[in-house]
Amino acid sequence: MKRTVDVNIPLGPIHPCFKEPARVKCETKGERVIAAEVELGYMKKGIERIMKGRPWQEVMFLAERVCGICSVIHNMVFIEAMEQISGIAVPPRAAYLRVVANELDRMQSHLLANFSYCYTIEHETLAMYLLDLREQVMDLLERLTGARVTCAYMIPGGVRCDIHHEDQAFMHESLDRIETELQRYTGMFENGPMIALRSRGIGILTQEAAREAHVVGPTARASGIAEDRRTQHPTYKQLGFTPVVRPGCDNYARIMVRFDEVSQSIRLIRACLDGLPKGIIRGGGICKAGEIRYSGEAPRGELTYSIKTDEVGRVAEIQIQTPSIMNIEACCHSMIIGADSIADVTATFVSADPCIACTER
Amino acid sequence: MSILQTIKNKVRSRSIHVSYVDVGSCNGCDIEVLACLAPRYDIEQYGIFVHNNPREADVLIVIGAYTHGWEEKLAPLWEKIPDPKAAIAIGNCPISGCCFDRRGSYVDPPVSKHIPIAAEVPGCPPRPTEILNAILSVRDSVFADWEVKRR
Image (cartoon, rainbow over all chains, first blue to last red):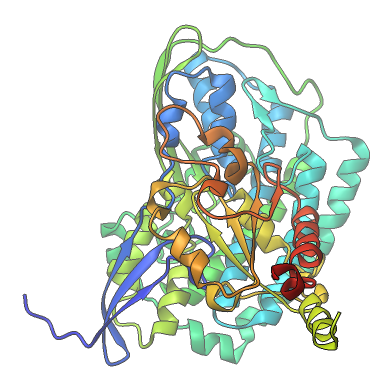
């Protein structure tokens, strides 16, 4: 088909707005974008090939290094898949502590995503406020697990370390402060007239288009699809989890879904800490041979591990499906098309929260 | 030392422009570099500005274990940065390849084979304060009296 294109504008791989290298090629007519294409391949490390044939003790640490931002959920999904294969039961206290670590990780990831968006639309004040809030969440994560990033908190049959009584009090105090500040910043985003001009009605992804592209995570929930793997997780079922859904379909809705999920995470952590059962944090168990396909909800959407192990607990085959690839495809096929200017392209791309490291692995 | 050199030293010590490039990492070091921007660490109080534009940068922060996609891109990028310049390797990946340098992977560490590296910050990932400290130490050792040293 013949098309009239004025300019082909490549964005990236090194771009002031992108944290990671990816190339977005836009075909424009005037200022309007008529087609876009994402070019990947700058981060391919072949981590699944490294994992094959190694014992689970090594793969556990490699799984975290698939993605540094959402390292806790990669650890959690791999460990829970190994537990399902081997029939290892988790003590209730450890199951609750896992939820605490996972939700803290989700909070910091969402705050970082919203920071990136605010930075891209040049609202630097709000961006810095959010980054400061994220540091407070990182403090809690460090206090619980012992490390800021790649903490390897979960192991088959439990978690690595217990939460102390004084840490619980500190966590409650910090969560109260974080919640008050978060409400203020959410209000700033919600009621900012200039933010609304840059965000509302831009980067539309309709529900039908979202279903066609198999979009996952906050991007899907901002298009009105109530899809969340946490609803099928046993511990989250006990806590009475319901996903946050917004019908907005635009950049504004995607950012607001993340803000809502952060406050939802705060409520979940409070519920966990209040109802924390007493007992051991680490049971025993031996990893056995088996095969499973297991999913969990990463901050960006559904994360699936297909694992096949042999009788001594070595990983014979592994496939990882990460959420960002669907979101990136939906981004360049639906959201970016028809954007009024190139500045909206970067904002829309960042609002889908692409994680190139876990997309390419 | 000439007066001109003194002025240059003084100006350069408070104006370091940073560009960062991710050549295949797990993202963990990326977010620790981003955390340096946070008001808690406040990288800009030392006169360090993160622009991510190689043509106006003084310091290039390299993160990651050098994948094949960067073979034709990293060296030209390094040449685009005007003198005086320095590259800092953040994390274990650019130094040794960390957990990615195994049989079957697609990485080619260390990065110092491809571009000259002035400072290395080991850690998986290093803390933001360590990254900040490395940039500040490069400022004193590379940019001070640069014209005198070049002669």
